[in-house]
Image (cartoon, rainbow, N blue to C red; front, side, top):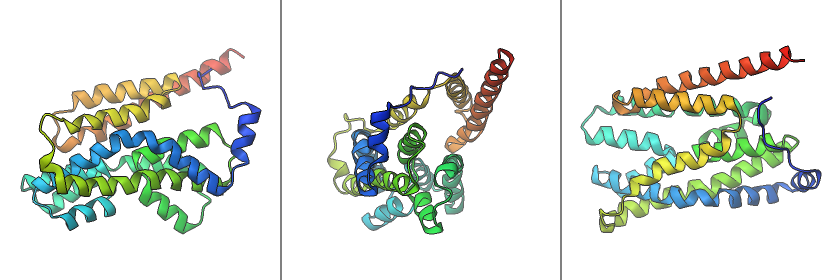
Length: 254
């Protein structure tokens, strides 16, 4: 059997289910706060890089508010600073952000019945951190109501997306005062490690992550991080094969 975490005890489950949407919103905010340790330096770094690339404060704010996707923003700014045509920069940024389609698909069983405007809001606010928190919350507490799920998601988004925009502006404003010895770019891998590690609960998850990492490293020579677009589906396919093998083995031992 896959080594899933133990379910919450009855008392803890009852407390979670008894929360009002407002309490779920606050819970989402509180549980997202540790991500700010790395998200704020990440935003500062984007502000610095975007400013050095020639964007003014209004453009940087618009970038962070409208795009709201760190990896895509970094990709677009880097390409624009290299004098790449704007259309190619936009397409590359969209390609880097294709992982959001996979995130969205996995949230459909939990949020798919929400009204259209809620689904649009979730799609806009869906970033790596809000997804990681939400999917873990939903899987550990499958009896949450739709209102509770949405409230939790919005709470996490509010606690992370607003500081992201503010830190981008601060980085653009005071970025040149940050000493070069302070390597802000360290926060990018730490952020993803903090999100992914708690989610590697089964052998299928671990194999998928391992294969994706190996393939990403093998394809690191490809431009603008496009190797990730190949590594991700290969990793998912490896995880699916392991899960299928485990299910067949389980049926065979019955």
